[in-house]
Image (cartoon, rainbow, N blue to C red; front, side, top):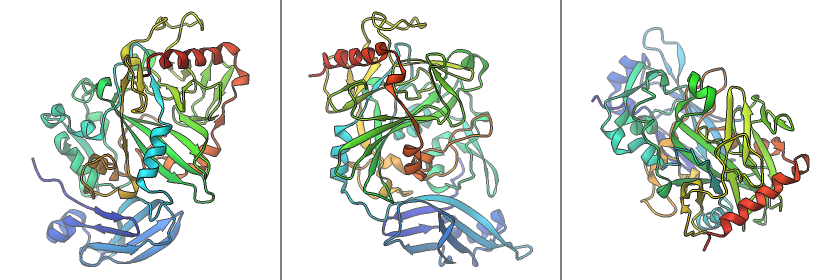
Length: 458
């Protein structure tokens, strides 16, 4: 296999932003031949919210910027150069960078809060895929042995990236317009076979601060190797895709007490219906007050139903309708709620509830909770593996599109999705969920779920 071109290496993203251009530095002739850009005359521009924060020449294939006092969030780095044939200045590279120059809380404090409110994920009996670590998502043994490749249109032309080298490509080639072309994936192949093991599932969390108040946010992220969908969507093959990411947000007041949670199901502008049209929204996400006695929960941990197949997150267990998709979220107790589904019963199977580490159980399994550490998002690990750092998160330096979806809408992987770029708007403009709009039996069912799971918590 040919070596991966390392276009841009993110070295530091804290109080200083440091990036390097390894291919340009080490192989300037190849760089000029492949890109048609003069490697000796590169310029950079760093913008935030469309305002220029820094610009100047690229010296020795390296950019170093003082970020002290700058806001946290998604920045855009452009690299421009003179075309070797006509000498015209052109944008050669454009990449999003997530930068957190400073944080009000240290990693230990954030970890304690993340664990105190970590959700319980509730699956249907027929669910076949479970959250995997980012390392397993890209470096499972089956992937390392695969001879398949992923097509990507790059600045040097179309390239076939061997799947065993995909992790390296993502870390050093994070152009924001790159897309992993799934038309070349064999959907019945290697990624579809990575189901994840519910006995060793991994959930991640990230920490964000409101730039205009003392609020802060903790996102909980789940990653899946394959999204099979269900029903008609699965039969027509209009929805299944490799790679899947879902997340929910806990909203905290400045004193560290929670006030709400926001659950995201699907892309915006797609109407989602619950109980026919009794509940309908098209924001892609809903906001619930938390804590709230009407929510399904065990102690401080919300019970979050996961849609079978799509892995979308919903406020309560039941059947939801979206376009061609009808999906069952969580588990329905037949003796409490009437259901159109045949996937209901008075008991739950072991795989149906993934519990956070603080709720040991003699029936259900605990997931491993790990930090994304967006304050350390670089191309190479900056810390050794440990409870507060997972080196595999470096793949999230890729700011392009992991998922190739039909239609005009697409969403990026964290930390470049809207729930990281525009977290304030994300939580404040979500559809407000009101339990009073629903039959009392729904809240009764929520309580039953909490009581049932509590029976098995030590």
